[in-house]
Length: 72
Image 1 (tube, rainbow, N blue to C red):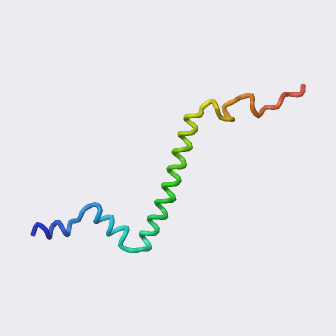
Image 2 (spheres, rainbow, N blue to C red):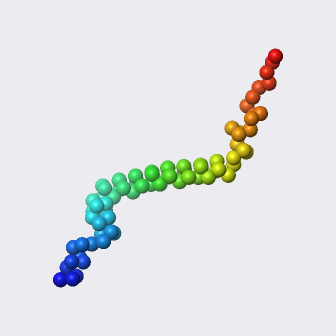
């Protein structure tokens, strides 16, 4: 009886298997969407880290760059 209860209740991984990996089309969609969202998250994180480490050194931070002398 105890083993039958364990078999029917399942765990987290068994639940994920039932929801995601049972059909190939759902699995492929999950992998592609995960890769896309993961790439976006890594790109955003690296960009913010680069900006944080280069404050004051970027082109936008230097006030004299990009300004033309006035011809008055």
